[in-house]
Figure 1 (spheres, rainbow, N blue to C red):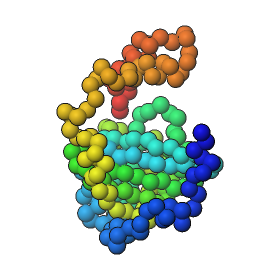
Figure 2: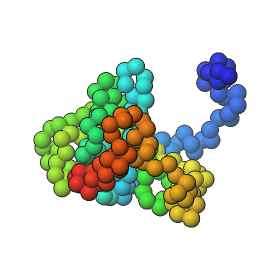
Figure 3: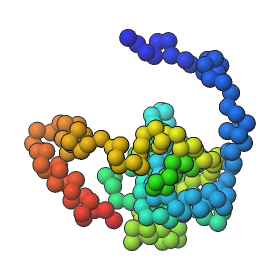
Figure 4: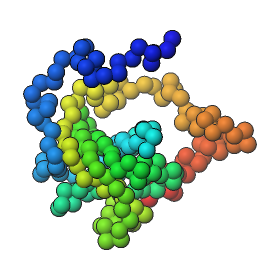
Length: 209
């Protein structure tokens, strides 16, 4: 069955099955980070960054840190410092190709999120990086976002998922093992599951900053 063969391909087709949004859904979108949105970002310890490359291939990646690790400049740009990772630089590669991103900011325990979409660039300007020391040292580079859409998103997804309710979480024994997943996806018979598991532990112990 080819589910793409009869897929909906126009906005008009979508509106055949979805009514128009209410006036408040459109009215809540602003074009800059105001003081309340700035406070939200200051409390956020986790965000997700959506980006795409020149061929339209999409990517979403998480970023986390202590509250306040993301900076909103006086001029309104949102600055996300890079942190030690796998050096794939997927987001940065996409941004240098297309110059656009979408962000979703989360606050632990809170269902409402903040969405920020806009123009983006990668900066290695020393005077900027020197102010971004959430992990104890300046990053190699930072994502700079000039917002053109800022708005809050309702908590329904969090309510449905029970994300902040530990008693609803799947039991650990029912979940796939992270090391086994990585081992299967890498597909290198010379590497053992235990080696991957130890590397995952070491990355958190010694390569977090």
